Length: 172
Ligand SMILES: NC(=O)c1ccc[n+]([C@@H]2O[C@H](COP(=O)([O-])OP(=O)(O)OC[C@H]3O[C@@H](n4cnc5c(N)ncnc54)[C@H](OP(=O)(O)O)[C@@H]3O)[C@@H](O)[C@H]2O)c1
Image 1: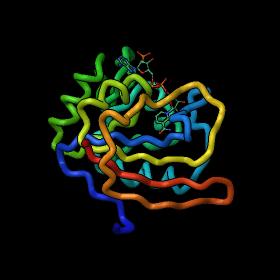
Image 2: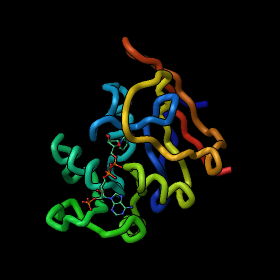
Image 3: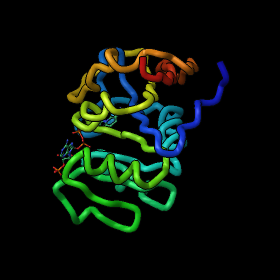
């Protein structure tokens, strides 16, 4: 397999998530780990895309200074005041997904938990970072094994603390 991740096509729906060995994804509203290579993988993949994202995750992007012309955000929230130049707000995942699809950009499902769950049956592809470690936390990715399993890309990597694999899967 090639070393570069498969490109997401315009209009395709792609879930992107990093999980530990128990499908853990979060702790206290943040990631349970700091893995620079995975953060870069995430940011590079979603660049130019239409990001469907929950309010907590969006606020983390906002706080990190990542809400700008590089991506469009389709935020699921009751808080309409989050809308802005690069951001639209929707009261349901279905509405956010429809608007993201209509943009013609590749759609990236960026979480959290409930949005991942709703999109698993609908998405075309799963971009998974599997962190080969177990952490403490409070948010888990729903089980994808009934939807995705056809591996089309894998790259194993590590930093000084953890080993992890970048995996891309299509639907069965
Ligand atoms: N490892 C990863 O790849 C990854 C990816 C994403 C998230 N995470 C982690 O997961 C945790 C966040 O999870 P979360 O699930 O709490 O965050 P979230 O989905 O970003 O935010 C939850 C809020 O978003 C809105 N929302 C989400 N789903 C909705 C739905 N189906 N219908 C209506 N509104 C909805 C609601 O906003 P309002 O209250 O404003 O109405 C809800 O309170 C954090 O720890 C984060 O770091 C990890």
